[in-house]
Length: 43
Image 1 (cartoon, helix red, strand yellow):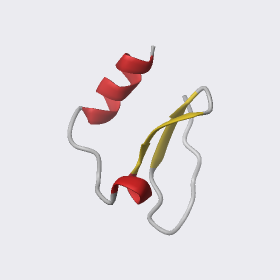
Image 2 (cartoon, helix red, strand yellow; image 1 turned 90 degrees about the vertical axis):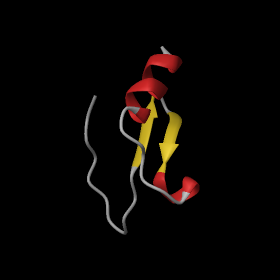
Image 3 (cartoon, rainbow, N blue to C red; image 1 turned 90 degrees about the horizontal axis):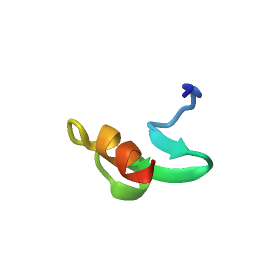
């Protein structure tokens, strides 16, 4: 796992080059626990 700094309010979570969450695409912040659930589902 790593953090890659960016700009412009971009927040994206990828796992093995698969996009799991994108604030830009969804138009919202992730809900509490949402990122962990997405990662668990992808594993």
